[in-house]
Image (cartoon, rainbow, N blue to C red; front, top):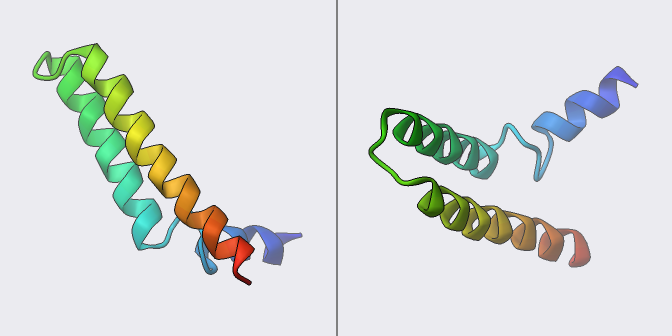
Length: 66
């Protein structure tokens, strides 16, 4: 079980790979900017939806092409 968790996080397409870390950094930065008032909450929703959708689509295509 532990091996599957590690593989899921750090393996191909895992959350802690470059694309996953970039997505988490973007979301974290947007949350920070929203909290301090630099970015309106409406922009947060559209940006995270677009980036999250792109991230999900890329992973789905990679899984399909296996």
